[in-house]
Image 1 (cartoon, one colour):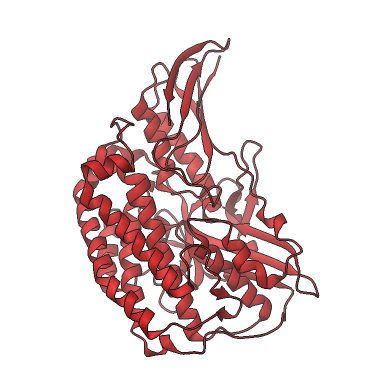
Image 2 (image 1 turned 90 degrees about the vertical axis):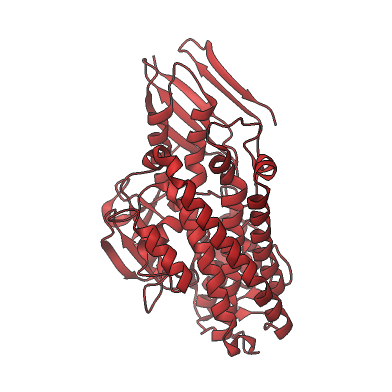
Length: 476
């Protein structure tokens, strides 16, 4: 009779989820599932609200990446207004979005995943957390704190506060950047750049220690999807066109209009999880599996667009002859993107027009439907609104980056479980690797909840008659 192994909850991710692993009679893994156990009701909650409230309202979805929802929501409202955003206003939005990418990537890499990389997948779980990292590798831990602080302070200097700034509004931003605040951001850039370079140099010296994980952590052919720059197909977080490439790196679809996402993306549902399964419509479900986020973005672009990041990107792409497939390399890609973001902020702030007072366009609604798409830290984020004649929201649809990756995360869990799990004898390191493949995607499940370090965990291996055959317990 088959048996089931449950990992509940998954630790060191943002939100709550569990994994179930189904074993056959011989104790071998037959299948595995990644369950998102919280219900997201944001689409219904915003119905009946004035459209101009949506950016601030949507920012409350997430305490880790509120700026990402601000950007996508504001762009959807721009489409409702049918206005052209002043270039300075668009560039200020870009800077805030880049700051968001830096702080979120720093959180993912240093706080959530570095315990596995620094202390080892099989390390004592009592020490394998951010506090253990701070004790054993204080310089790297401090670098993570400083890099996240840099991103958050930049958001505060632009928007007035670090979390849920109301500065991004339909039509642009609410106030211009001052010279004093510009100089404060510029003064912090050199240290942030050095931290990014130093961390990349260190990571490249240890990545070979994880060859087995690289080979088995979500290492399979999929499509990759995301935004690329309108003019040069460079790395772009704020706007651009959608590109889709396959596992060999060949372009499957290019210059797709983000606002036409429904033409090429469909969403499936399964009874065992609240998270939908988006897929590439021309290939059907589940064959249309694709990945988004740092790994996908570096597989899609023709270049990053800044000097140092382009060098690192070229080295990254040299890992494979086609697209870089292993989800383990999401970690590597995040570091390259951090370096790019710091360099790109420096470029944008060098433009004298960044201090212009013309930062917002004003209008009443001119359309009944608006779609906003941008790149969040975890990948492509889509907000789709419909309004009535009074400007009130009648319907909203949100496709978040974690949703795009849902098919891939489930396949990754299955791959890791089949490789590592021995149902006849449970081991903590095996458990950690099954969780770690999910952490490579840095999923944001509740978009508001984050658990640091160890969470309470109980795993039971039960026989067909309900007898507990083996058990592992963790305390908080």
